[in-house]
Image 1: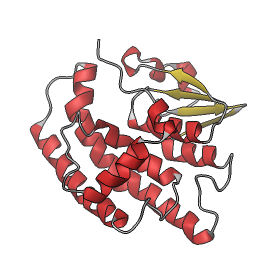
Image 2: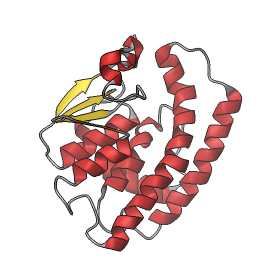
Image 3: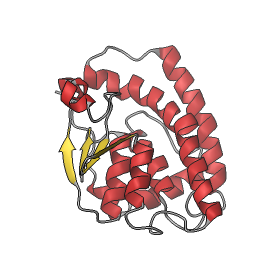
Amino acid sequence: MKLHVFPGSPRARKALTVAYHLDLPIEVAAMDPRTGAHKQPEFLKLNPNGRIPVLEEDDFALWESNAIIQHLAEKKPGVLTPTDAKGRIQMAQWLAWDLAHWDSAWVMVIFETVVKQFLGRGEPDPARLKEGRERLDMAAKVLDGQLANNEFVLGDKLTVVDFALAAPLSFAAMCQVSLEPYPHIARWFRRIEATEAWQKVPGLPVAA
């Protein structure tokens, strides 16, 4: 399997932490969005959206990070996925919530505070940054509530949901987002950060 990623990005971290935690044989193909390689015809054959990450396996190409992590997790059923029907639909629920609320809020904040500088696209837009932080606060309160009585998001077992939702928190310090108002997220995130898989994933490359 080959995984095309932009090293350090939250969506790359999702896929890599799952692959590393499961000890899957995977070739990592690093891509830098500044080169435009992900918009070239050869790559667009893999993902017509021109986005990263993309997983290649034999003659199969899979895009969208949350789909990728579920596919990887199925290589070793039950290790990072629930084994019961209720647990599996809850996994689907939280991965959908991630895209609709959590990830989308982080995207706004990370883009304005980190990505713009990395790509040389100017200063942060105060209005967009304000909106992103407000949306992030709303989503964080939901996640903090879920973790108030749970060790991990779905209960007492680590799943792909934890790696998916923890991924953008690698940018919290760079974005000056404090976890102090969300003590249950902070406690949970420390647990995720301590995993061997998380520590194997490289951070964001320094902008040239």
